Amino acid sequence: AQKITQTQPGMFVQEKEAVTLDCTYDTSDQSYGLFWYKQPSSGEMIFLIYQGSYDEQNATEGRYSLNFQKARKSANLVISASQLGDSAMYFCAMRTPDYYNTDKLIFGTGTRLQVFP
Amino acid sequence: DVKVTQSSRYLVKRTGEKVFLECVQDMDHENMFWYRQDPGLGLRLIYFSYDVKMKEKGDIPEGYSVSREKKERFSLILESASTNQTSMYLCASSPLSGGSTEAFFGQGTRLTVV
Image (cartoon, rainbow over all chains, first blue to last red):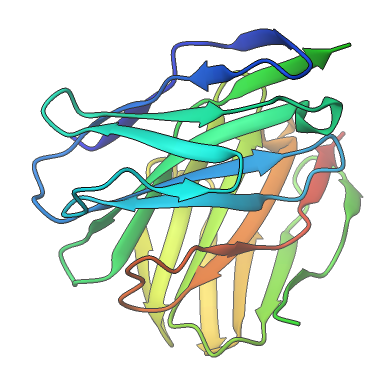
C-alpha cells in the first residue's frame, strides 16, 4: 500500500539554525514524485519543493533542500538558516500513478515546526 | 493568478442535513481532489476525479459522495451530516500528468456539524 510517514509530530529549532524534517514513503511504483508543503496558521497550503523518483540530484529551492535517499525510501526536508516565519505545519506528499493513469496524491500526518529566537 | 476557490470558509450545519462543499479551479486542470484535515491525522484523501463525471474513491470515502459535471467544478456532498464529519476540508487540483507540477489548494472550508 502507498503510504507517507512523518514520525515527528513537533520540532523546535532556534532561529538561524538548520533543521531536518523526516519523511519516509512506501510505494511499489517505479515512477513517483515527492512534494513538501508548508501550512502556516492561516491555513493555506504553500508548495515548497519537488523531487522526482528518477532525479539523481537532490532538489533545492532557496533555503529548502530535499535529502532524497531512494534505497531507504526517505525524502527529508532540510531548512537552512531558519527564520521565525518558518513556524508552520509541514507536510510530505507523494504522487503516484493510479490505475487510470491519473495522479493520486497522498499526504503524511505532518510536522509542526516552531522556530524560536 | 491561478486559483482554486472553495465556496465557504466556515460552515455550521445540523446533524442529518445534506451538505454541499463546492470547489472551482481556473487552471483547466484534469485532476481534482477532496481531502479532510484533522489534527494528528494529516490530510486524508476522500475522493478524486480525473475527468468530468469520473471519480475515484480515496482512503476515507464513507459518508461522502462527489460530483463533477463540469471540468472546473468539483463538489463534495455529505448526504447526512454527522458530528464526526466536523473537520477542515481542502480541495486541490493538478494537471493530468502532473510531473513536477504541484497541486494547487483552495483556502479550506472549516465545517462544524452540531
